Length: 372
Image (tube, rainbow, N blue to C red; front, side, top):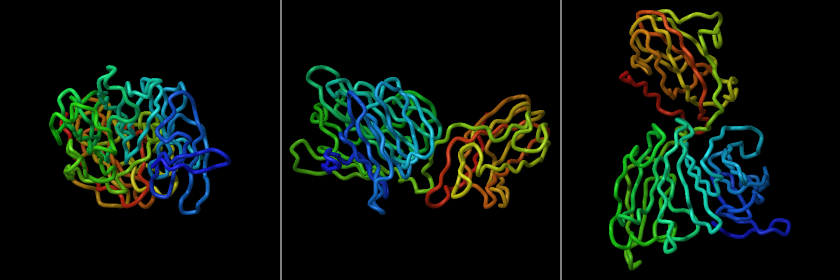
């Protein structure tokens, strides 16, 4: 990274790469003061496919994430700039972005390049992990990243305790908050970790795998550690969507006629081609499914259309209680998913699209029962 490439008299650097797509920018590590030129190139065809201006950019698959000067909204588009793929907000204008799988890390820097605020956003659950920053005293000023993002985890140095820490969120960021909401492990400990050790020089991660590497203080011995977090398969990577309601039985949306789903009733729901979900090429969708006004205890199951219904459930409820859950489900060959009310009474069902998976194999469909 960082190799200068000429373009019409301008020097561009490699800012990010994912698969066949390469992001070039005038400043590879972000621009602290203003938007700058950002280009996306297709390595297979060796052509430029999109250009824009932004303070920072990151690419994951065929999704481009960018931030703008003075704007606290981080936006996702296709790498060709043809479609909106979602957005999220940060407490300050982001100047650093990194995207791995379903996660996007961001940071805001001051005019000297020191990171002041940072976090990780989960595009599926739409929650944010706040990541602590290092001391901002005069002796700990430096430019650039303080942490490295992997697929389902983050590694950072803790100066105050002299440790290299791993934050594990491979199964998603369940609630917005700080490190107290995460599983945190110590990878290394020692006096050398009480002084800043620059990422990519003194330590690094395999951002699509589970390997973490660091060198001793004397730079004589290299440690290579498998952190035990399995890399997400291609089909487990998602593209965020702007939320769109696909089903509301109270209003007759998504199926003919308004009215609750009866006991044992099934609803075939068309998802492909609706609410931002592509018409074709979709392997799976993430739905926010809600059951409301249930007349008795029960549970709901969601599964790919034209396949056998599983025995497990995605939502459990008691009479009169409104319950919601995020459900990841492969899309059937007809572009539909099926929902079944397996309760003893009727209930209204509402479903909103959240994200899609379109690359590689379909995610493993594992319906689970949740206690309420």
